[in-house]
Length: 88
Image 1 (cartoon, rainbow, N blue to C red):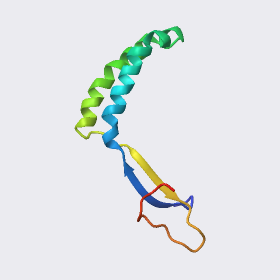
Image 2 (cartoon, rainbow, N blue to C red; image 1 turned 180 degrees about the horizontal axis):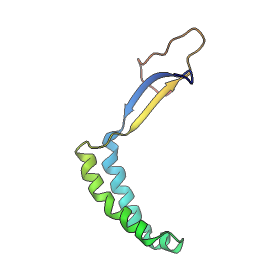
Image 3 (cartoon, rainbow, N blue to C red; image 1 turned 180 degrees about the vertical axis):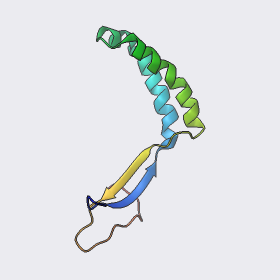
């Protein structure tokens, strides 16, 4: 790439999304009064809370992908290698 980075791997964490969206929804519901007191617009809170449950179902159906893409700056004289996908 132009930045001199070589692709190393993709770690698929998509199976975490339903739990993540459900936890966000619980947090919005639990912290609603605190967010209102902090000046967050009620419409924004309501829209966010309304959109999260459908996203849980969409994530369960595989509509979203989420994960980590790792790149490495190759050492001088070495090409990138996607084998052994670790983030070390």
